[in-house]
Every structure is written in structure tokens, then in C-alpha cells.
Length: 116
Image 1 (cartoon, rainbow, N blue to C red):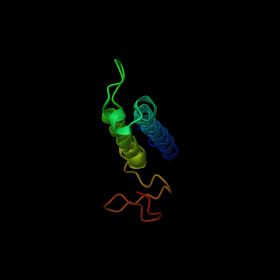
Image 2: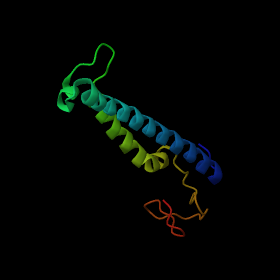
Image 3: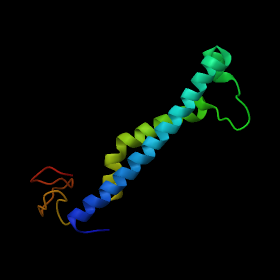
């Protein structure tokens, strides 16, 4: 792990970007799958309820069973990506990663700037 504060912030920024990219990809794929089923119901059968339950053919995933969980997991990952990047890339116990103050309190929070 890097010990320089600037390196720690760079690595966290890279990890944060990758987590948000994965979350955005999951949301996009889930949204495409759900909208695909919705459009199939509107134009394919003329009945939205029947469009959700009809099998579209070989190789077609059922959007409600795969799309909605992907949407939920992607949104959750995107919202928690900031905390996850701090958890994945921990700052060494040598002081505050933001301001460089050497003493942290018992909870790991900087007494100068409040950064955790």
C-alpha cells in the first residue's frame, strides 16, 4: 500500500472510478433489460402484463428476473462506492490523509479537519 498521502488519494480515486463504472454498467444493463420487456409488452403483444410473462425466444433473458436485481445492485454499489473506496484503500495509521495532522482520535477521525 502507498504511504504518501497524494498516492493514497490517487489510488482511492482510481478505485472509486472503477466501482462507479461497474455500478453504472449494472444499472445500464438492468435498465435495458427492463425497458426491453416493457417495449415487448407494449408493441409485441399489446398488453404490458402479458409482455412481462411471455417468453421472447431462445437466448432472451427475462428482464424482470435479471434486470431489476441488476438495477438494485448497481444503484447500491454506486451509492456506497465512496465508503467502499475508503474501506478498500485504507490509509496507514501515520496521521490524517487529508491534512497530514499526526494525531487521530480513537475512531480514526482527524481532530484538526474531521476527516475519517
